[in-house]
Length: 462
Image (cartoon, rainbow, N blue to C red; front, side):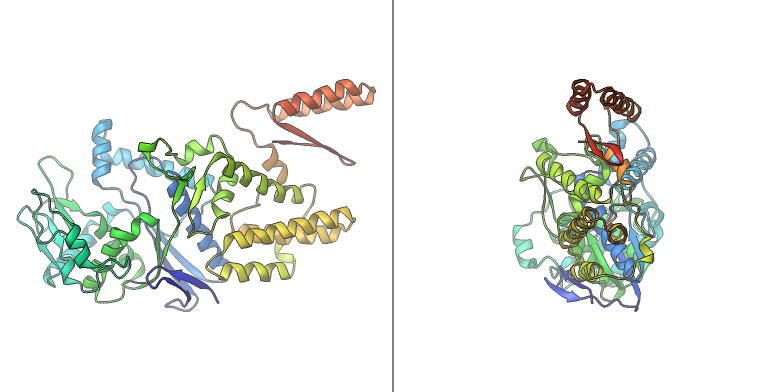
């Protein structure tokens, strides 16, 4: 049985999907006005692992991750760039897909865009107005009446009276209550807009997700996920408007990934510690970055630092070292082992990835022991199990030599390294051991480590 921590109830619960054998999951995606940052990578990788694991346990998973392609930030950035907002969003969506592919993130089952669901958004708003949960303000905006939903705050555990006491209404707003939020924003002259019964305008951010998720997954679905900053007000508002519009429970299980911190500080542009995925991948191999993110429990905070990335690289390298030089059996040909059972036990406990990775390291130790003792068959079998379990986490699917020899900017090419190794071999054959040592040292200075064995010399980047 899989147990998942439900943010709504603040406890782990046995996961029971609405429809046996099938999982319907929605995760809030990106607002595509800029490149994806490390916080986005955290959510992308966390829910990719969750999806992979559920599928490995035999569930038919429908994973929906939306794209917000109309928003104030998008319109401002497009205006700054002097380009149509659609050109900006198309470019950023393409970049997002490149980033997630490099991180080994599988595409979602569906990727709805807000601008494709305007009719559904308008219909949901109309239902809320007709039922008295929303109103058209004097300025043409449409607002949700928070006080009309008695369970408001049940996800975030915030009390409405406290929110009202601390809220202020801007003089330009036409809300009835300071806690009310916009469902539809009236358009000014020349602004991007769509026609509606209340006048030309565009949807508010919160209503987009309610319309897209219920259209794709139904009025009630199994899991809703996202980043930690979305819990309030975004997810709280989604619950209120969705349950008022449909009359049904919106989501059974709420999941939130932990925050990213940089050198123990909150990541923000103002602090100068803000990193996009592609900036990080200029320095670190994609699988190392993925391993770094997977190594922490999805609900825990992740502290990004050069030291922590370097340690992730060393830890992943230890796993690939165990696989290097072994021809593993076909993963599906090896029967279930105690390692498989331990892995499942840990992942069933709220997707305990750090524990699952410890199983991979235990397998690596076994492989190394088998190799030292000449038990080739056992080593090949353990390697197959290691690759099989690694695949569930999106790890260890490269050829080990490809992992160790991957190039980044400014490094010696593989051809240059092989030429120097050949020169070293010729020097050793000629008994020029000083010359051979000099070549090894020259390579070491450029981050190339040579590993000599009876089978020959392999090399890897440090």
